[in-house]
Length: 70
Image 1: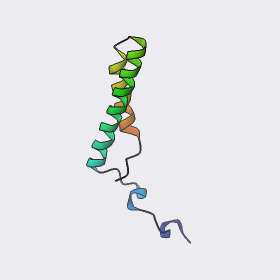
Image 2 (image 1 turned 45 degrees about the vertical axis):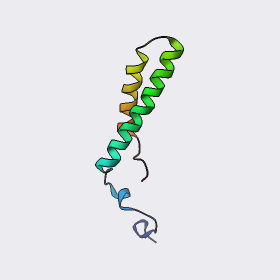
Image 3 (image 1 turned 90 degrees about the vertical axis):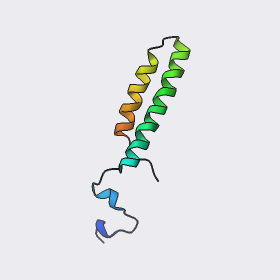
């Protein structure tokens, strides 16, 4: 049995990227995680620059993470 005839394989596994809606969702999810992380680190260290660092980390994470499931 070849790999392409396996049941349960969807078209996304053939190199297609996420839809624009999925891309937006993962960017917003990454921003939310980064904002929470920045706020928590900033609260515990009393250093306010953790917030923009957390947002940058969230944007980077959202850009490279696997698209969320529908």
